[in-house]
Structures are given as C-alpha cells and as structure tokens.
Length: 151
Picture (cartoon, one colour):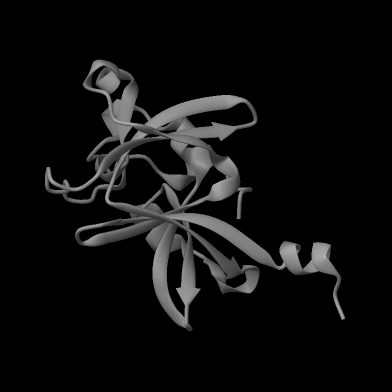
C-alpha cells in the first residue's frame, strides 16, 4: 500500500478556469496568487484567453489577475470566470499530440475527468515566455518554446 507521499505524487493539482465556452487549467504549483483586477495595472497584465486564441469572455464574468510564479519569475495574467482547485490522477494527464501542439503551442496536456477529455492544461513555462504580440496569434511554434515540466 502506498504511503501519503506516494499518493500525493500520483496526483496532479490544477487550478481550473471555467469561462463561457472554455475551460483551462494551470498546474497549481505555478500559481503565486490571485488578485482582483485593477485597470491601473492592465498594461502589465496579459489576457490568458487572448493568448490561447479563445473568444473574449463577456464583461459580466469575474475578472481576476492570476500571478504565475515559476522558479521566481512572475507573469500577471488576466483570467475570467470561475476558478477551482482540482486534483486529478497524474495518469489522467495526456500529452497533447504534436499536430495539436502546433496549433495550440501554450497547451501541453489534456486532462481526463471521468475518462473524458475535459481540460486543456496550459504550460506555465510557456506562458512566461508569451508576449502581448502572441495574443490572438497562432504563429508561435512549440519547437521554440521549452517543454512543460509542471505536469
């Protein structure tokens, strides 16, 4: 019987972001904090949905700033919608096939929930290297981005 440490290692903790028409996840270990959105800091905050190429969420959805923190490097991301911490079995995280990773270079895994593909898992390391010019652009390729080590 595995001990508590082995049981934790066999699970992945994800912060899920449920917006109208989209559902994303980021490994929770890379989340340094969640802050209220402040228009005064909007210039230094990248819109996660725009980076992912998703349609903008309606204005009434909850707007927050997710502070991404990977190895001491931080990036502020605008997120919209409901946030939830979720633990999933590590074996339910499937690497994105190459053809899909070329179309969605910030996404590295698909998480299965109840055996069905339910969440696209975004690489914190790749988000750190994303730029405002990438918002809405699909020109970046996964060959120029580091592999995700978070999942």
